[in-house]
Image (cartoon, rainbow, N blue to C red; front, side, top):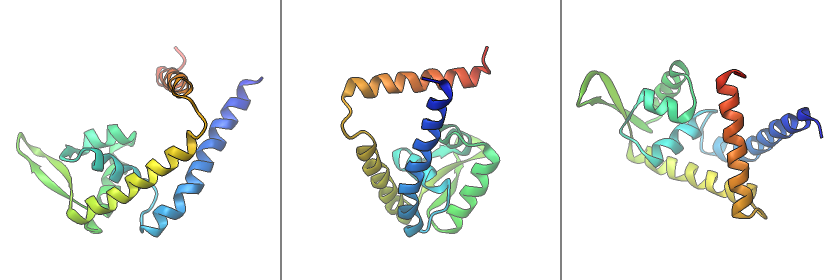
Length: 142
């Protein structure tokens, strides 16, 4: 086996996952990046933009633009942070929570499809390998 085969499989896996999810999110009127943000806010809102960017693995500038669009759509609000005058908390609106619940369910359904036929130990081993790859990439090969 060659290392490039694993790299190609990871790319193909992500493309296939996005291809399955895209119609669901288009039907909800969401553009790329928005579902991930709504899903993370569904899990926990009342977070700062920086916290949300970190949880979504997005840069702050991209996060800001995407949050602007989600706010314009009525899915979230920015509330003044009680402990910091220069910071805001990102909070789902009622409509946003409903939309986020749909997104969360779509992600849950794709997770079921992805892990069909896998045993718990296989999933744990895959996660350990993925975390090792992430650590290698973040360290810059050092």
